[in-house]
Length: 209
Image 1 (tube, rainbow, N blue to C red):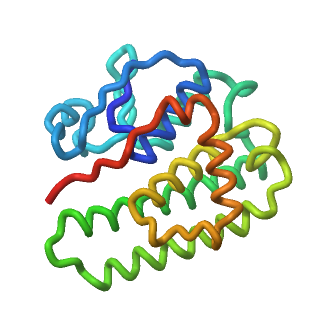
Image 2 (cartoon, helix red, strand yellow):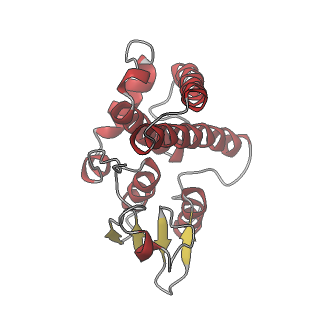
């Protein structure tokens, strides 16, 4: 199977890191949604990444769907998300907050690099959403007493948060104050020290307007 998308996307990166942690072999096609949109189109008409193309040609789109498939593939004993119950809901909540943060951070980046005259109302809204989500995640992270967000093993919430924190720091350094978010910063650094995170990384290369 092969994974489409560049690793400077927090969504592509979280999928690639999960694949590596699960020990699943994959080919990487670092296609850009801007420069390589027509290459992506046959697999994903939305021309979005990540897109994971399976051995039989089936194309999975959106990181949540891809990770759900990977969890099913490796089985309950190895999956990085509980199968049911309160633990699953809590895990999914953190993932949803991280994904939403990533969406807003990407939108704000595109607003800056692709629009000659930025729409102030949209910029202010994105900045407020980013700040509020970071604040909630910081408060949640402070209460974590286990090595990883929801236990002794790394999970999708850990990966999602770490990837989006790195992206936000690189894309909008003025919005991530290390002194304001020390727990999040420390969590991200612990994850980034792991081999898959160090292997699967790419400096941010935003599109040019």
